[in-house]
Image (cartoon, rainbow, N blue to C red; front, side, top):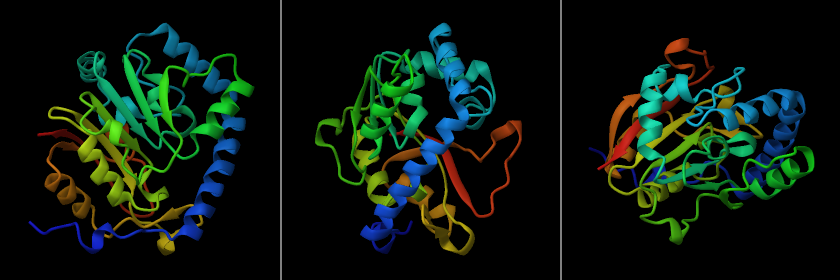
Length: 248
């Protein structure tokens, strides 16, 4: 197996582009929130009514479909297995799984926009779904030492790789946070038309590069996942990569 710690570890955005990408992401977040306010309220109310809430409703989130074979039984079995463990989300933005999966005792979330997001939720809604989540409003490229060897339940990173300065450093950190038996739920676009835009960059050319990198870092791939999942694949212009994996 090739070693993917060489050129593959390079940044996919320079400092200037990454700054602009964050500005772009914040604008897009606010635009999405304004257009989804009533649906968001309904999602949060459903979370409070159903203990093992997956987050799948009104087409806004895709946890059940994408990662759990569109099968409620598969989801419930997984949810019960991690409820007393530690959960980490990376790049979950405004309505992340860390805010929805309130049945999990200890939840952490890393996203450089979290301070802005938290304050905006406070100003807009009667409840802040991140109140019980330990938030790190910082880029995920730099490892957080207090999380090393701490995440024994699940690490969740969806639709994030192509927004970051260096996804490889983030994946490397993920391998250090995860303990044996921890599940990784990962999906993201890796190529785009013309190499991306102000908010997105190509991660790599071949999905196998990410998979091999994860294997080198001690993850066993349980199954691959695609955008849209078994309920119906959603076409993308470029390539994507996703998987359910277990840290060995």
